[in-house]
Image: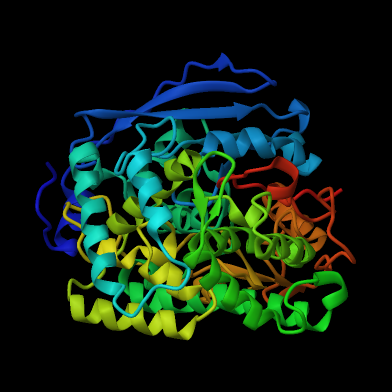
Length: 522
């Protein structure tokens, strides 16, 4: 069982200074793993306070540069999350990378500690998670806080029972230290890195710890690291507002273009509120014997709205189907075990990383205020079971374990090479103001802005993709304040294939549980 909580600053400082002995560099033995990819395992310290002690095995993957004569080194790709597989991220996105990146770099990724093939964390089993998301509501009642707090405590206890020995060691400081060992194992003097969403926080911590080892860091869909780690309520509130703002802008478009959207009979906002309540009162049976309710609808919207404007006509059709109780609507697909493999680590890593106050009264005030400020999607998130970002506060305020791998130092990265921060103005997942804040917190950073709806910019904007590629390959830093404005507009009808600039994962791949895809620019 994990040890009881101790002072955050003390435990992290202990992790940073307890041992001056350098951890051993992993030896990578590569083997073919199909499609031209090579895979290996890397042994790294479980606890960097004891670098010669127990180890944890990380699964890694690479594909060598297509043009060895042009090869500049290794490009680390880091997906969002926490909880997404870096191995899958490389395998699934390699073909859609610009040729300049595939020619110039060995493309590398790995599953971070506690995720996927790297000793995946286990909290609730699939049956208990299914029960939790089935019982959750799209429109929680006035007494929802108490049950949410108790359910979060039960989730925490399951984490301790099933993964207690691993919990203290999955925080982002240790992830960044793993990256530095992998950099050395690959023979790279400095790090070249593209991280999106939560991958930006990992990259930020790496730069803070090892500024002199940065060659190029592109941080797309950035976190404000100080708010994320040290002022979590100040981080949570803008995220609620960003998500609800994106949903509100979709509904405004739907009202203005009823011919294309086709949902709501002239008042899509009222129709959406009614639909959530109707589904809660009378869930729709699913093909596999489960059921979909208002929470299911909110959960699916939360992730799929990341695609930006190109998915808006598809939302209209899917909402119409939901009104008709048609379970082929992709918004009526409940989270499944493939989701839970992502959601469990998503909660755990953030609870280790973030310093939530322990005051339950303050928690209730913040949760209530966030639900009220974001009425479209916020209440379901605020009072739901521990799943994605918005639903972490109830678990993290009660987190029972040590957090020795949490980073709480300066984020200046003084002395680093120039770092590129990318922010999307209408990002529903990582608010644009976080990218602005990160660009100012770093000593040597440039901000690239993408004026658009949707999450992240690389692969969704030719302008941003070219800028990021030029930076990673040739170290050409866009002038601070550079703006891209080439957003793909909504189609005139529901697309049947993914249009340029988007993956439309739900439509192209069926049930896409949480597969991070870089947009495809054809």
